[in-house]
Image (cartoon, rainbow, N blue to C red; front, side, top):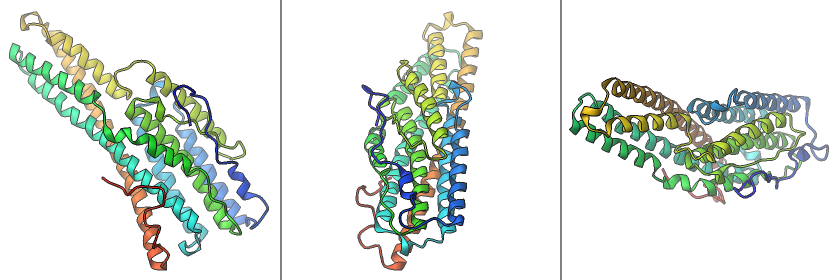
Length: 351
């Protein structure tokens, strides 16, 4: 795991995931080989699609929505793979179930943390709308009210979010889950565990980027090192190196905010504040109107991006929750769920 004083030290405690596909034990049938190959090629393609075309694409809301939607698609695909493997829950090793339940609780918690940030920024949009409405009138009183609202907006946006502060411990738990349980005498189990490994790597990567962006802290930015023998490893390594390097640059730049659209709004707020903090008779009407229009346009762009990203995060939350509920229902039906309803290493979800 990367820390600020040692940003390039890789985290790789879990050995080579290819080892579980060795000839020892159950061999893979051509069907299983094909299922795994299709899954991993699809994963590689998703990773390639996340590669930003330009550095300005990183930490904008469109890219973040794409990353979250990619997670949703990948988690849906793992469900389909389980169905195609025809591997009933009754055949699952208890360790696999523990890992899945622990991961699902942590993912639900981190989704709640992300949603709280997005809600907070969206609430700030109301203050900006108040400013724009107030400036319909050009009176000294209205200018004072507008300045007060702008001050409130900047204070609101810069205030700490307690839920985001918990992301580091959640990420630690997710990283620990990368250490795969051993699979013995189950070819289908080997395929499932290796596919889940790919899903978990993508999930940890995306969550670490979101956590770093929302907290404004590099301590949440992880460096994961995966085996070169995995078909999707080159795409992942290139993506991680590109995105992490730019995120570090942004975090060290001294910007007031990290998200591109939010930074654009903050720039407009500063310009408008400079215009209206003077007495009314010194305010240039043309400059005022230009500043108001600029803030309105950027605020709307931010609001729309937040709405789309919020829907994507909520969608991921529902996918994780539905998958967890389905597993628990199957466990209850087979009478194998007395002590594993939450997962051994996780706290219950609180929303």
